[in-house]
Image (cartoon, rainbow, N blue to C red; front, side, top):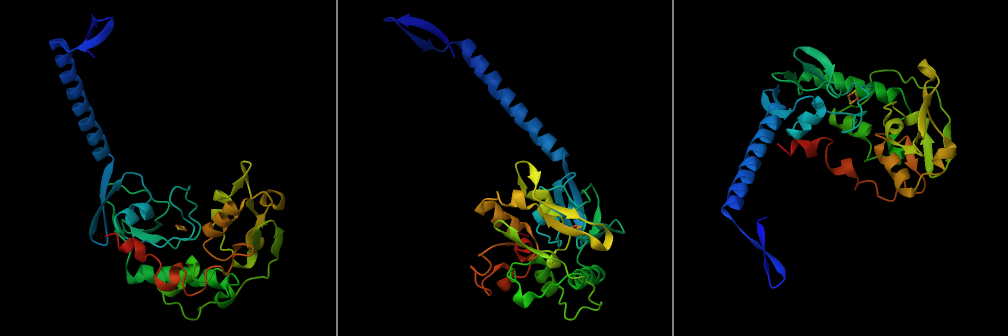
Length: 273
Ligand code: FES
């Protein structure tokens, strides 16, 4: 701002040559700052190849998220963008620089070569989905999550018919006394998403208990009783299967109109490309 004159008792701005010089210097500084910022951003970008397609993403971004940004779908069950990866389901397995690795725990780097859509990986992912199906009681026709279930949607995607493996799930207790939540442990695929996202008073509402074959998901009933309607709905939505249900809401949205009833899982990402 320029110097001030006193005119009729008021101070008015008057622009001087010095002000013009200062303005020019400030705009030049802004241009330089923007250019530097652009360079920093560019230097954080890496290029990598997925199935022959050249992709670009922020260095260090997890492969499944970087692929999605480039319109490439890699299936996930235990992963959610922004959450610390757990790497527990392995359905996101890709061949990265010649080795099978989980796409949700592998950050992208310059020059990476990734195989994603190959018959070998499709077969591997289908096998994982089949194993998850036989390890729990996933009776889709009677499940309230049918049509919104990611495991079921992957079963359709990989054209799973009859599982090749014997059923091997011990019956587990259901929990109907946890506030607005109904918990069916028989459908849990141990993805830990509920453990990582649902909190009340800074404490986990869900946790694992037991070990080995006896490992199962548990809910803190005292904390669960404090869940708001919104939190209970979010807990149901974060569960990729029908293990966590919000009571009295199971069939509000009719079967046949749900998320994966009309569109194959992953199709929304593939449309981005
Ligand atoms: Fe990567 Fe589950 S999504 S291990």
